[in-house]
Length: 80
Image (cartoon, rainbow, N blue to C red):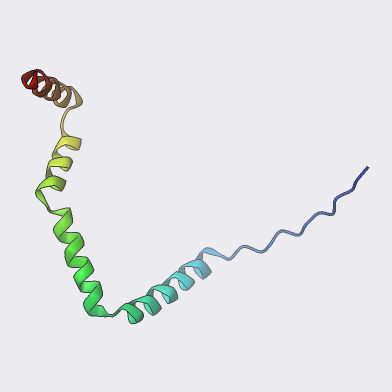
């Protein structure tokens, strides 16, 4: 028989250590990228979130499933 040695589990960092490390990395990357670039990215994301397509997606997701299904059937029937 082969006996395997039990490996010692590695100590996992605590939640606070993980958060502190993430904040350090975020601050370093913010400094590396620059505030102007981050602001441009924020503006682009905000613009995308409020585009007509995204608004339509949100309305469809919020609508009643049966109503959406009926409308799609109606549109498909009209194409034929």
